[in-house]
Image 1 (spheres, helix red, strand yellow):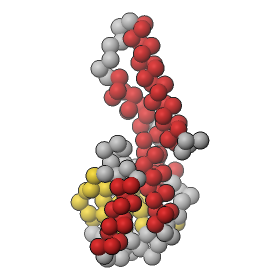
Image 2 (tube, one colour):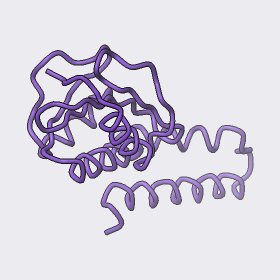
Image 3 (cartoon, rainbow, N blue to C red):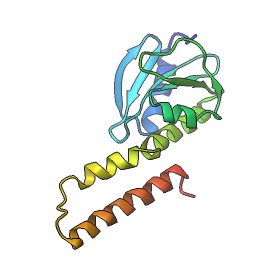
Image 4 (cartoon, helix red, strand yellow):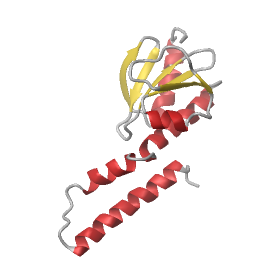
Length: 151
């Protein structure tokens, strides 16, 4: 069960979200603070429990984060599909950063980025089609770097 949030804890949770790419605050859900990103399709919720709780709204990201922290088995905010409990703030920062990276690179997200970026490009000549391929290569390369954390 999430604990009531003091202003200090709320500030630390907000800082963890903002520092790791979640720059848009959403309406809270009880003791859960909610955030979204202008760069990622993922929404997250943060609350303080005995360790610190993190919930998210993208099923494929929830599965990929299954090894970080412990499962949170209590009531989740609406739209949340999974949650983890971590022992301290540095691990929470790592978990949020990893969720942000994964939400941009897991299957279909790179495709959505490619379709959006190439929607207005002409496709009538061979040279124009080659330009579209090059755009796709850049998106795929950056996605791999994000997924593998620069390695």
